[in-house]
Amino acid sequence: MNIVASAVTLYVDDVAASSTFFTTHLGFHESVASGTYACLVRPDATGDIVLQLRGAGERPATGVVVTFTVTDVTGEYDRLVREGVTISVPLRDEPWAERLFEMTDPNGIVIRLVEWTAPAGL
Image 1: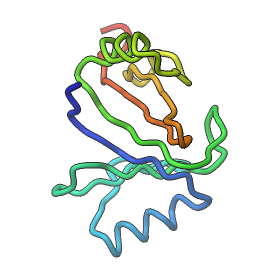
Image 2: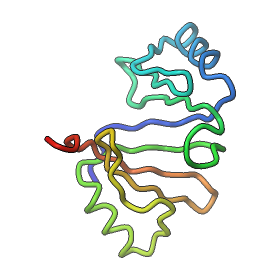
Image 3: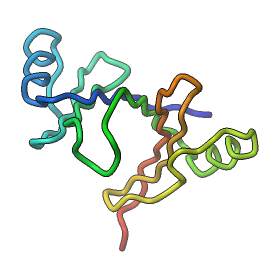
């Protein structure tokens, strides 16, 4: 597997408050932000922090999601299925040009593998 980036998603009750904490005290800055979501980055960090409003989105927002951006998400999906890993979110294409799937480790930690794709119609 070739991991090219990583992120940790933290589900919070107040995205703005957490974003302010990370930007004020830890040197992160917002690369993308909305009322329910913020992606925080640092030029010297190897991973991003994603803040997601608890309860927003399609699945219950509890715990932590570790995301790895990979170079061949379809190949990794096929390999992990062959190895008997239980896939919790099947491989799919998102409208914002992301191809992803999720699995859950034995302790309930969600691991998302993702690859950026060309937007539909290009």
